[in-house]
Image 1 (cartoon, rainbow, N blue to C red):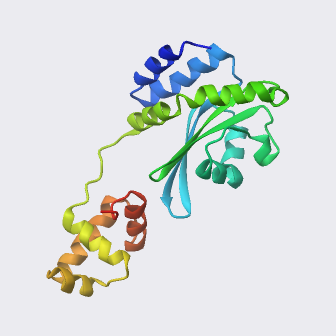
Image 2: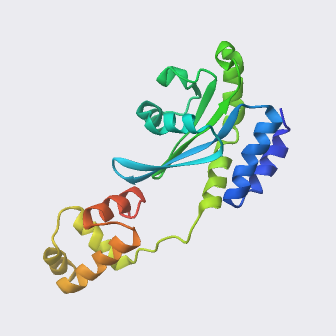
Image 3: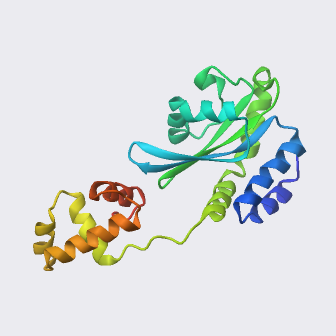
Length: 214
């Protein structure tokens, strides 16, 4: 195993998508993994998500991951490392290490070694070892992909919050003592800022991002 402090230092230096991908390439070469990388799932709606991959994966494997709802459900709800074959019956040398849910995002570390399924003790050891770095990897992913945060104003948040419980624009205007046109303006801004197509989708995205918790 590479020195733990050295790995911490490598992860801390990640600040771009290129450096994030290179980190996994280096890990693959150092440990002689068949495949290694990080897969993230980002909810874009209550029932949909965007999937992103970092590291080196076979195309057939990525197709399997994207279509495997059981894997997605496991990564969303569990944190225990598990052989992928226990979820879908395929890829019996692939170990999945989930990160758990962080706001509207979750992810898993993927490690593949030949014959790993025949060595359960080794699989457990790998899962325990790499779990040490999962939070740092997730933060590295966020650093690498961070864009300027969308700023929802106080008034926009008030309007979308009332809309989330079924109030119409006119009802919101009466509650906040502003014109209906102003309410529609603020709600329209929320739709644009969250890259939504309608008011309902904007509400869902604001909920997933924690905008309506306060």
